[in-house]
Amino acid sequence: MKLGKIALIALCSATCFLSCNKDDNNDTTIVVEIRDRDEQQEEDKALLLDYFATHYYNSSEFDALTNPTIDNLKITKLVEGTTTPADGTLLSESTILDTLEVNFADTNYEYYILRLKKGGGSLSPTFSDNVAMRYEGTTLSNDIFDSAVNPVNFDLTTLIPGWRKVIPEFNVAEGFVENGDGTVSFQNQGIGVMFLPSGLAYFNNAVAGIPAYSPIIFKFGLLQMAQNDHDNDGIPSYLEDLNGDGEYTLNSSADADARDGDDTDGNGVPDYFDNDDDGDGIATINEIELKTYNRGTKKEIEDLVFEPGEVLIGIKEEGDGTFTGTTSIDTDKDGIPDYLDAE
Image 1 (cartoon, rainbow, N blue to C red):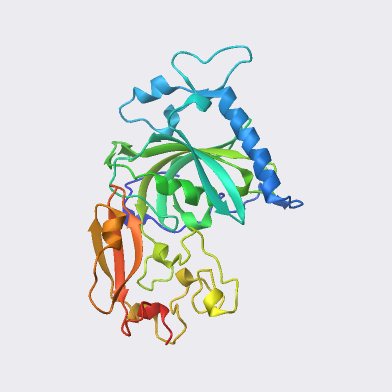
Image 2: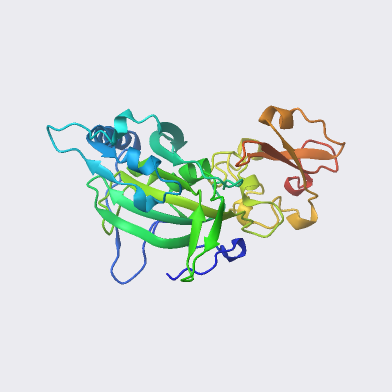
């Protein structure tokens, strides 16, 4: 795509190749037999660890650049019987390759992030926000299956799970300048590489260029973000993740006391897409009065004493390391905000 001036107001929700399917004339998704997730995770982990032990990146060259992009990052397979070049770093020996864990689909997953640049901007997206990105996706055989040369806008809720886990770990770019040819250059963008087991990627879906049950890799540059409110009810979408798992799930029980999903009124619509979250006939936007408090630590937010009839509904870590707490009104002072309280 030809990129002109990028502004946050231009960020929009976009369903793309990374969701589940790439819907064009040349690409199809083939569903195959579903394997046990725990067993597949162990296989994927072994494949990824072997990849780290046999591939290096051009660390010296990359680190020497004042404003690198993903184009400057090269990951290379070691020739058998040789050692890592002096100007490179074996992935398995890198101090910036982190192992993270998450429970997804009742399975404990390990995934990995090469943290090249945090990003110099003050903003960091949540799992439900819109982002402007550049990226390149490859298999463990280093075959490229998708890429974006110019920035593309994504709604993270439409992408594979791994993106929702990884991208919030980075900050947006510090700024951008317009070039004479109508393009834009970003300064100090968030740059990393995610190494995902198939369970946080396409799992049993065989997508064009990616066999089923394939661990995959994405190089990415995080450029900009915009906060999402999918149902325009006045509550930012990230605050409607009621069970705090970074995913939107429906209730698993008809018993209101046993519900563990993100659908307060049990009507089959997660709160982030429901403009009457508690189903009391009053629109959510008419039952809120939001206030925010920014402090240096999460505990400082948790220790705040609020006014009577004011209740904390969520805490977010900002890109600068501070924390923002959001409150809303609780008319009957029962500890439940009005917009989630049908009584």
